Image (cartoon, rainbow, N blue to C red):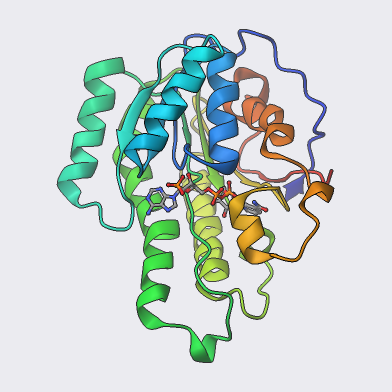
Length: 253
Ligand code: NAP
């Protein structure tokens, strides 16, 4: 069942105080906006990215808005191996001893081309970054999330993740997979009142990924990542405690 939640949610200034929240793909686009907003609303953010320089910039930007200095996790999801995931768990455990939120946000677009022409290596890369690494990270971090009194686990999908569209190839298929992963896991934890699992479709948003997919589009007609941030804060914070197992579609601007 899909639910629509309005964009006009007004988060309290200290909405996420005391919560440790890990955001993947926090160095650009929607992930970056959510990381900044979560930190500005009191969260201890753990920001994941693949680029050290962009992570350092995010760190400085979070501190500049008065947020707690974020934890930084550098991990290329294309190449990361088991021991690096293990290192990530140990880093979160050692530094914070808890995890109250996980936003699985990082993704790549891959090619927009007919399946007949889709490069096989590229296909594997997109499925790995968007789906396999989402599963691996989630599996690694579930034990910590389960220790929280009120944990929010959020997956990210796309409209092409539930309605196949010509030429969207591995990206669309990976998002179908993410929705499947979300549904299976939400069902497994439906009776656990301390862990809620939801999936968000941000819809058309003014980011580099969108620009790559629609280079000729007038980007200023689209909502921005900052417009979306309140909805993400809602889903990561205590006000959405009753929202469980939902696919949430962000409203169009
Ligand atoms: P974006 O601006 O391209 O950001 C994607 C993020 O993922 C970046 O931080 C990027 O890191 C990170 N990432 C990519 N490959 C990685 C890898 N191998 N290892 C680690 N990190 C990696 O995209 P966005 O538009 O904000 O998208 C955010 C989420 O929303 C995605 O799941 C996307 O599928 C979904 N979505 C977006 C739209 C839209 O219109 N924008 C619509 C529907 C769904 P770098 O900063 O290093 O590039």
